[in-house]
Length: 416
Image 1 (cartoon, rainbow, N blue to C red):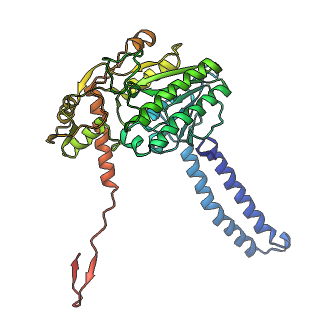
Image 2: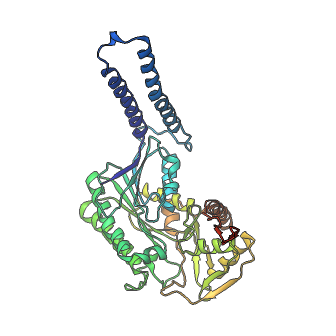
Image 3: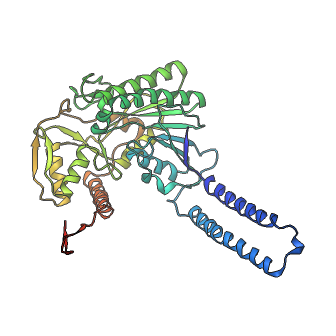
C-alpha cells in the first residue's frame, strides 16, 4: 500500500485530531457529573484544573504544528493554473532526482516524488516536506501506481556498479517492470514520460565519441549487464509504447554526473577519489588509468532533462560533457583540489570497464540549445565541500562506547 510520508494536509489533520481529543475529554469529564447544578465551588475548580492539565500540552502541540507549517522553504515561482504542471519524479529522493525535484518545485510546479529508499534518502528532499506543492511517497516502481500527472520523469534505478551488482535481479525488475508500469501510467493519464537512460547502453564503445546513432558494444552476460541491458530494454519499451499506444516519450542518455548528494560509498570514480583524498587514503586507479570519462555537474544535467522533456525531440539525446579526461588525470585533479598527500595506486582492471566514454552532444546543442555550463573544477569544489561536511557530520554522530571499568579483588579500577 502506498505510504504517504508527507503532505500539506497532514498538519491540518493533526490539528483537527487534537481538537477532537480535547472536546472528547471535556465531554467525558462533564458527563460523569450527575447534575451540573449540584456542583460546589471546589468541584468546579478541580474540573477547571483537570481541563487545564489536558489543554496545556495540547495547546503547545498545536503551536509546534503551526511552527512546522510556517517553516521557510526555498523560493518558489508562482505559476498560473494553466502553466503549472503536475509532475511525477520516480527515484526523486536520489542524487539526480532530488536536484531535479528542486528545480521543478522552484519553477512553480506540483511535484510528487516516489522512492523505495534503496539508494535514495529522505534528507535529500526534506526541505520540501509540508509544502503544499510537494508530496513524497514511499513506493517501489515495480508495483503499479495510480496518480494523476502531466509529466513523468522516470529516474528510478540503482546507478552505481556496487548497487546494481549487489542485486542484479532487482535492477532488472526496476528497469523493465518499473518502466512498464510508468509507461502504463503515462498511457492511462495521457502524460509525457522521460526515461533517464544511460551512456552504459553503448557498453565498451568502438565508436568515439559516441553519437546517438551508435548501437553499442555490450556484453549481455557480464557483471554490468543487469544495468546496461535493463536500460536498453527500457528504451525499447518506450518506443514500442510510442508507436503502438501513442505515448509521448523522451529518452536521455546520461553520461557521468557528479555533485552534492552523491552517496559517499556509491563506488563511482568521483566519490571514490574525493573520499580517499579527504581521508588521506590511497587513490585507487583500476588498470593503467588511461581509461577516459567525461564528467558533468548535476545542475547542467537537470537543465538538460527539463529542456528535453519540454521539447519536441522524441529520439534519444546524449546529455554529457564532451570534455574528456583520463582516470589518472582526474585522480590528480581531485588530489590537487583537496590538497591531499594521498598516493595514487594502481589495482587490477575491472571486468568490462569501458576504455573510452565521451558523448557527441551536437544533437543536444542543435535541438535543445543545451550544453554544460559549469566548469569541472568549480563543480568539484562544491562536491568536495559537500563530502567534507558529510564526513564531519558522520564523525560527530558516530557512537563511541566509553571504556568500561572492571573491579579487581582489591576493588581498584582498571581500564579494559
